[in-house]
Length: 338
Image 1 (cartoon, one colour):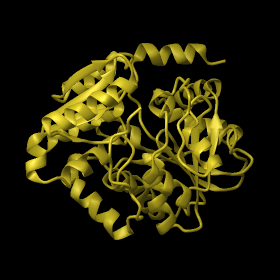
Image 2 (tube, helix red, strand yellow):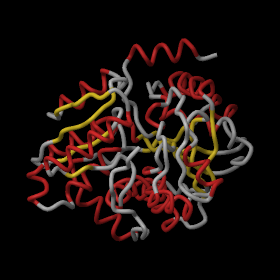
Image 3 (cartoon, one colour):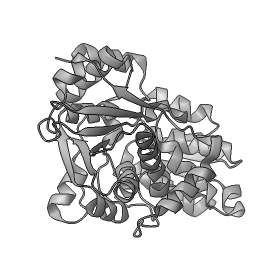
Image 4 (cartoon, helix red, strand yellow):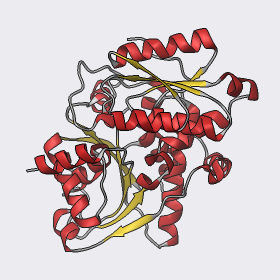
């Protein structure tokens, strides 16, 4: 599979640069709220004696954090590049975000999605004015995206690699640290769902500079462990297959720049299986009345699973990354939860 070229985020963005990037985003994105998750259910299921502050990025425009990176890329393009338009390859959330960003900044988007992408997400990308091209699989989608870039002069915005993408996602961590400080909530740990790693690279870059003693944990599905295997190998690797209900976390490979940021700033990446993710979806719905997609529930699955003992007594930030899921799919996952 060919990978689209990108600007590797080899230098960690400074806090001042992250703050400036957030100001540049302005009202095109929301400062999503934080919520103190309390109650006997989370007290029993989560780490003993811990307190949890949920960063509700699922309330972001387009339904996920992805809008931040897409907009940051477009904001940093020349006017001529924006006029030529952008393209993207995605099974859903990134395509939606790029479509939104292009419309917000007067550009145009041609996004490539595999036919397996949920119709719900295709429709959302189209609702923001994008032209959607369907391919047989994700490998063909990347080849098509590269061809569009070459033939039409559009800029290809990578879903998780690139300095501007990481700068955009760093604004999530910057906001979380600022919001936690305003509540006198001294973060000991932050949990972030991981697909290709663009979100956790940015969040960790911000958190580790603003709260150096805070530990940052990633969580991947067992069926898509590209970052965990890359960390074990000490270099970016490609996995043979992706098999998880958390399709937004189903990156088939790690990329050099984002992986380097993860190596530098992330303390550990743990794995959860699909059964745990379904249970976490149901737990979040039962206790917070939020309908989250599997990727978003992965953080809660880690909090109540592999990180439970490790985080006892700590003050934890939990990033709720998004919720682009159709009601039929959501209901099926809850019905299948054991």
